[in-house]
Image (cartoon, rainbow over all chains, first blue to last red; front, side, top):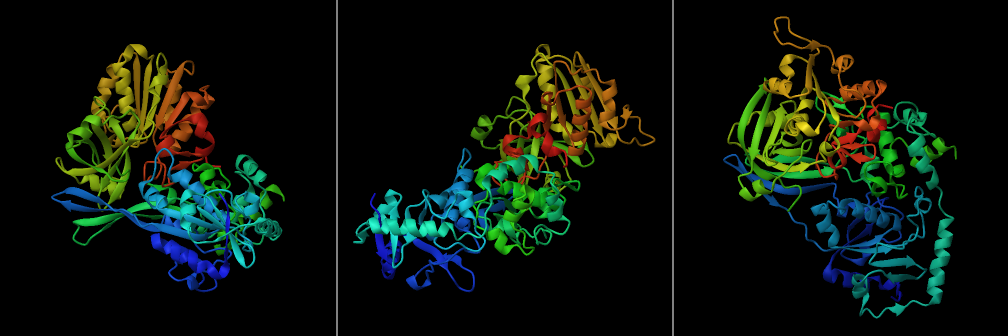
Length: 346
Length: 275
């Protein structure tokens, strides 16, 4: 399919088209950090952002959601499933986050498909945005998940100066831009994209050698780095881990959740809910009789890092995409790329 | 059907096992659900008490593949709520989940069963399976340990198990009250190994109990010549979903709920021994 271009000053045209069918969510910048939120006017959209606090995972696997409500009458219960049917369009998602969504899709929609994730995901359109300016902590190019995208989008935008190159990924994407009378992209536009992406690759400040990770998970489970991170003075100028769980909550591929009931005061009705859980919290692996399979902080931080290196039950579906959010939020300044370097002597 | 939504079950029968442990027989009021239900020894159910939550509980007997029989000790929020239920009360159920014991591997082999405390629950149906297929399976040896005689469950089965042809049962407790008449050995279940009849040749071992007991039992068996791949363990982990999505039950590269709860020792050995 042919690509198109749109002048930056004409973006409202796209927004109005999107709003005809979808609730539109995109990056906004209310303070010093960006966040994904609902866009109703073009002024709110802030496409030249580097990273957001929370990844777009919140649209498919929200921090908190109700699974169903229940009623109890004479000891017998009835349940009422809650459905999520909103059609939404995510605008301006960077390649690392799109790759994370591809991973979550593989995880949640495998042979056992999660009904809540599925209903939200199938109602979502993705208008991705290639990165031309990395955030100070990202290292997506070393994880092969950015800074440009090859799959997983309905429409893909690239900033090429005064306009955006608009590439079409799916039929839905094509239908969305049809009839907008946008210019067809020419060779100069493509060349400009190539040039900017090449330039982008040189701007990364952090990196993690992907070939190390296989060796770390096989050979370094008893490396002293884990004790340094968990109980001693930290690694590479970081402080020891506080087990706060921030890294897991901002990680675009962390999927773990807890399920709990909220009961009405009458004790006759309530809701069953789920919310994101964190393997860094001590209760995560606790069972009865005071048994805990990851009681020590070093076991928990190792479990998380190994998971991000691709060695947990979620496999590569929960592995790192190099967005750098965990580095940004860590109160102890723990940097996953520095941990890998410390172990592998980079 | 929504995977997270439990079905209504009704408690048909409660059989007391010890002061805080009961065996429950549960059926579906919905006859189609009841007809379609089938399970294997070693699988588990997610039992629901609305307001308290959900808990993973193993099936402690399989009759005609259709009944839901579980043995529950009141130790946490959900299990204590279940213990307070009466016959005729309703309970939410999902499942069965998990892989179950590899019963197709025990044909013509000697079977050693090592159980600790409540760990005998998912193994009772294995013992019954062997009883029902006596000619196809070699010697059966059951080593069952608990903290005190009162913590032992299925006491009424012991005589039946002793009468199984070509079998041996040994009971052991950590401590025995002075006035107790209970006939058993004193010591951990691993202390039964020196008297054990089962040889490492042509045998299969099934272990279930607290993880620390399974760790040592597997290690002891290893030192007396059992190969890792002859040993199967049924693991316990915190579980929220039962379908491999919530993440809590991860052991190394596996989900206990989906890939287990029964694992070959050779597959999980590096992950259950603390590093």
